[in-house]
Length: 328
Image (cartoon, rainbow, N blue to C red; front, side):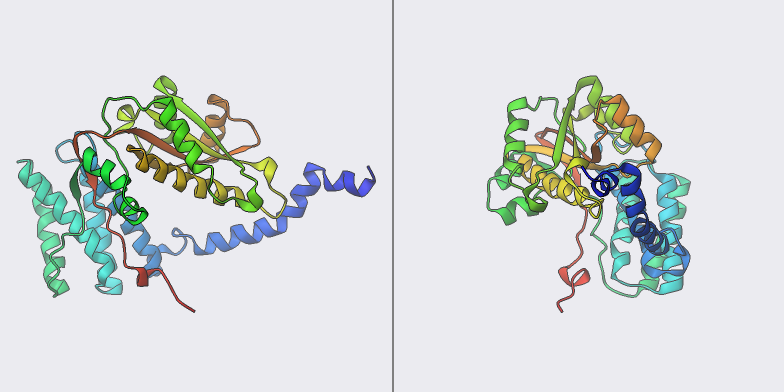
């Protein structure tokens, strides 16, 4: 091997080659991410509202929401919504957070758990609604009741029916999901496209105490992790990518994950994707604790379990196509 090839394969040389592009990418992201100049940007301010809206809404689908759950989140959501409207004016993007807040208040009224704080919340929300001066009924947030039987039937319909009736599940039954079903879902998902057919996705399946420990470390499933039967970690194998492709593994693993979730839906199994957007220290510890090879990049977790007979799911309103597309 000549000296040029030796240098080309050296980790330090590869790192230095990647550095300029990665510095530029990091700088562009730093300027444009939701945290930088948040209060001055309508879009970035809306991100805070969307995050709080989801955090509050998903609680409606948990196994046993406690009385006055999410009160501080509700107060913060109302405050950010008021400030957004004062600065940028009312627009349709406010309909869902207002709907979720109204459902939050209604939930506590139905549960006879309406505190003085929630009464104050309602008074401020009524001012927002009256100042909006339009006829929206604000029913785009909260939870809806579904049945396992119906979801299974929808899963066997055409693809549009399957996709339209897929929900993130946070309240599973106690019935186990067999290893054979998991294998079948993985077998269906393997047809997912990947860059140059490199098939760089890697999957680790955990159950029992390991499943619980992994979900607790992830942190986003603390209210329901015990009801999930298994959790799958989808990784990308860095060995399959070159210097200019540090983010391509996330694309391949994500494509595979969506196929996997649809496969579980088709097979009558509930699932929920859980982000691994956590700090590097925790991610490194996760890899050590759960024996993930150094060359594998954890991308996302998918918790799975069987449907209950009847249960609640978050409504999770979707915006119209014209809100996120541009035909050139």
